[in-house]
Length: 393
Image (cartoon, rainbow, N blue to C red; front, top):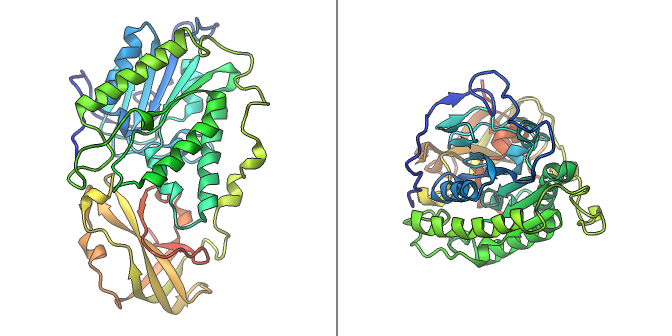
């Protein structure tokens, strides 16, 4: 895997329990946040792409240009992490917070800050959102149809745009850079680009990283996603140049009475409510105890196939009997951790076909945070079967 250059920052590594502050004290408003901003205050949100050389360079370039920058970057982050519509999520990949008053990195973070609280605290005029790579899993999920996947991604992007542009703020999106085609097929990358451009463009501006980057490092020797320091810095400087122009001379200057002209926005009828995108409830949330036989499983041969420290894999079992609770189907799909701390869980991936197991299970949907983990799913599409998981004590 390509090593990300974090840079020679004076930072403190620790674990915190509340977003945005150390300890439990509420962070004070930055000077001037109670009054009209001069128009150059920026909130910068990002995922693991921004944890290394790219994020450090972009952050510093913006500060060098005289912008007042509030950076909140979390490994693995997506709009699911940032929107208050969804439950708080922890991160073991790392978190970086930099404001005019502090510069700290954390090895883990218990509650990723919600964008609404960050906006309330920092009162930005513009919000940079660097995201997308972690949404590929949603875009190619086998638990929904291809059309439903696209609508789900569109929905959360639009929701994020609406939230950050309240009170006339402007939004500046940074698409993922090009990935190795053996990691994410070219067609999938193009689909993600098309969705991001269509949904986010009416709310501000977008930097199309796909058009300016090219992943040339070997795969699977590297992860096929993250860029080395030199390429990351070059990418960041190009993004900074475009954003600085947008923020100081272009349409991003200051606040607007409305962030989006309703006639310009993507029509709501093209999207669907998130409630309609979830698999239909076919069983209750209560535990069931079953005897079952393994008949198919997803394969993880190489740790480079997985991006983050943890991932769940999906297997299919034939249900032999139900000793407790109610389960109406002859088969079920089981989610189990196949990667922990960047190590393949061999007892899971090496489990032989035909193995009989007796387990107490609950729907994966009982654990919202686990639903958003990276998922390895090579099985044929079957939307009728619920995905179960062993019940946690």
